[in-house]
Each structure stands twice: as C-alpha cells, then as structure tokens.
Length: 86
Image (tube, rainbow, N blue to C red; front, side, top):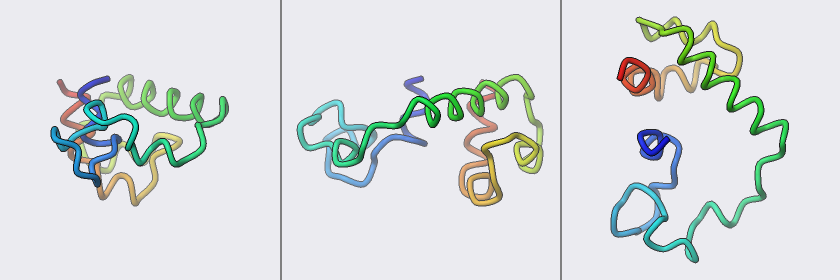
C-alpha cells in the first residue's frame, strides 16, 4: 500500500517528505474530511482488486473496471498501470 501513497495520498501540503502526512499527522489535510463510509471503502477495495486482477496492458483497459472513469484513467492511468505491473 505504501506504493499507492504518491497517487492517492495528500501531497498538496508542506510535509517534509512531500508524499504523505506521516511526518505531521496533526496538520494532515485528510483529517479535515469525513472518514470514508463502509460502502466507499468497499468500492475502493473492489476497484483496486479488480485492477490488480485484470492486469491491464493499455491505458484504455482500466476503463472497463467499475470505479475507474475517464478522468481517473486519463490523469493516473499510466501510473496505476506501473503499480499493477510491479
């Protein structure tokens, strides 16, 4: 999961590492939002499992997975493919 932090973590603040809020959790921007609901977590987990199981080889293939739309595929498709490929 640590490999996903640069893609889904909070990178917009001035944390020393620039990748997550592990260094300054009390000032974490993510703490300003409500926790994800059980349904949201379930959908996120199912999406990631489907992505890993599908082993997509092109930027278009993740669009077939429920939970990955055109915006996410365009913005993060190449990065997600890199993670899935290992």
